Length: 425
Ligand code: ATP
Ligand code: MG
Image (cartoon, rainbow, N blue to C red; front, side, top):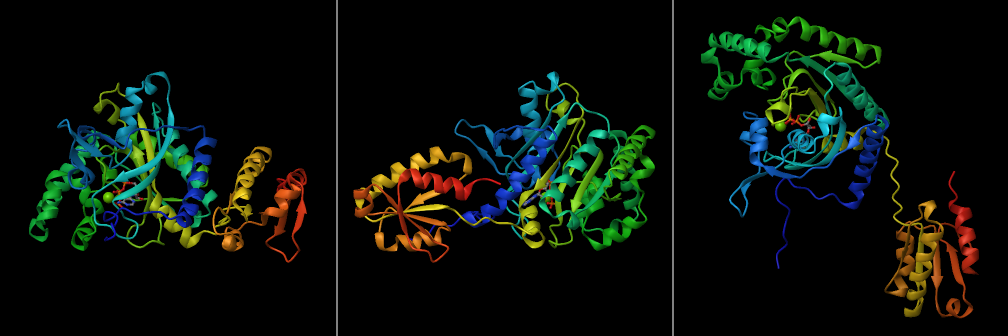
């Protein structure tokens, strides 16, 4: 029969790759926790309306969403990003009214776009969202938290921060209008796609990759000329805090981000190590989204790390200390009866030395090849059980990493020996 392949852009992660992911995920979780952030989980599938309402004109909703009709005829979608679902969950569970929650989550997102290095159709994000705090201090906190994650992962030298101020709705409306006016003079130079963009969502042309647009943008109006005094003062506060914290950044007035709901501060962490897919993390404020999704008006801000790109960066630049030992102790079972005994011993050992984090496995079939398996497993000790050992109620131990002879000892002595070898610290 022919093999069945994965869907395009949906990748398996082998145990070897998962080792690197585990390092990243554990460190990220630890950092979130150390800032007092709490984990939240919410569904991967939601009503399509949740995403269309929060991101009306964004590419991820208009072009890239996996949308289906379920058996009841409702339109449902795989989440293309986490913020909308997190906001819905925070409203539904009344988290916002009671508190100003600082939340984090991680999991798969789905976008139907062209797969390439650093871009897949199922990809993972680790994200934070904070509700109910209006002041720019919280954006500083989130950026400092990101920077702590990069430090702990050993990749801080390869990431640089760009920030921008998108102002409030009034600012963006008048800026959009002035961009449209500016581009009117150059209509013949623009392809239909760009003309459409300028008509519908002019801010999106700012991060266009087209060279002709890039040139025109040099003389285009700048958003900073449209920012209100209050908004500028908040942005200045953020800049002050980042400088105080020793975080390097540059201001990029062309940074707009792909999602519709952002306002005021936005930022991206970029790397020059990965080629075209260079944004590893993006974030910003979205102070109107909670109300748009049916909650009481509430400030909000957050970021998302693209895990595939983070892992690529770690593999290319960080020193990874990969523990590739899947096992510490391996029972070699020479007879059928010894398998029973090995199961019993290993359960008892797991109980006795559970605090040492020891991994135990056993060979269940093919006595001859069991020593090979023991060696391949990375175990340091083979625990051999055959007729002789069963008769004398002993276990033969053999150090797999030295040339010493095997030695028959009692179970109690084995426990003592293991405690001595694997004692922490
Ligand atoms: P890009 O411009 O690269 O498409 P984006 O603006 O669509 O990114 P966001 O929606 O802000 O990305 O998502 C945050 C992060 O998630 C990105 O910075 C990136 O690291 C990651 N990401 C987004 N789309 C994908 C994808 N298809 N595959 C892998 N990672 C992705
Ligand atoms: Mg995208």
